[in-house]
Length: 336
Image 1: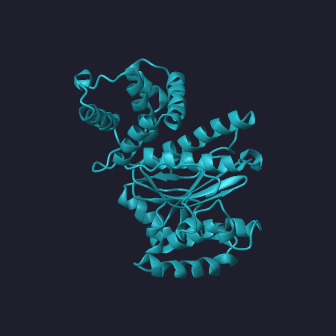
Image 2: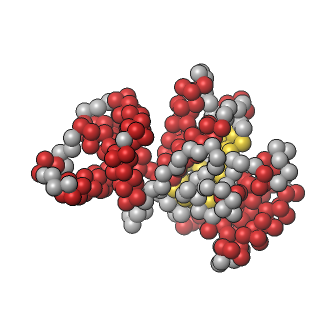
C-alpha cells in the first residue's frame, strides 16, 4: 500500500502524531516526559522549527509545528530516534519504541490553527484522564497561561493567541473559553481532506500550485530558504572561540595558542557538545574533522553534560554560548 502524500515545504504548518509500537506506552516515569521535551527542544533548535502546541499522552504524542526549512523528516527522525535510544537504555526495552512512520497532516493556518491547538490540548480530556485541559500536566495548555515554569521554553503561543486578540492578556481568557467550547469535538478525521490536509481541497490546490507540485510522489521537499539557512558548525566555532578569547584577555592570559581556532582537548569537547545541540549534523559528521567516530562523539557529549553540572566555569562558558546561539536551557525540575 502506497504511503500517503507528505509535504515538506518551508512555511507550512503541520500536525505531527506518533504512537508507541503496538499502541504500548512510551512514557513510564515522570523523567521520560521531561526527556522527550528536552529532545524536542533540541530538535526545534537544530532544525529551525517552531512549535505552537504539544501534548504527550501515555502511549503517543501530538505536535503542532511550522517548518522554516525543508527538513521535517530529519527533525522528527532526530526526536524519535534520540528519545528511543534513551528510553531503551533506561528501561531495558528491546525492539521498536514507536509504531512505524510518524503521521503528518499539513494545516491551513487561517482556518484551522486555533482549532488544532485546542484539539491537541483536549487530548487528555477526550481520553478521560482529566475533566479539563488545565488539570493535565504534559501538554502546552498551562504554558499558554504562565501557570508554571514553561515545559518547553521555545513554545510559540503568541501565533495562536493572536488569532483571538493582538494583546496576549486579552487573548488568554478568549482562548480558555474557545478551548472549553471545543470539548465536544471528538474526532479530527472528519476535518481532514485526502488524508493529508487539515484544510479544504482549495488549500491543497494552492499549496501544489505555489510550489509547482505535480503527481503523487510519497514526499515533496522544497529547497531550503536562502535567507535563513541552517546554523552551520562554523558559526558555533566562531562563537565559542570569541568567548574563550575574551575570557583569556580578561584573565590576562595569552590567546595566541588559539590562533586559527586550535582548541585544547577540553575546548574541543565543548565545541562538539554545542555542535551536537545546535547544528543539524549527524554524530559522524560532527566527529569527522576530529577523526572521531559517532560513538566517540556520543561519549564526549555525555561527559560534557556531567562536566557542566560539576564545573561552574564550564557551565558559564556553555551558557554564554547558548545565549548567543539563541537557545534556552531546559532544566528538569520536579517542582515544575
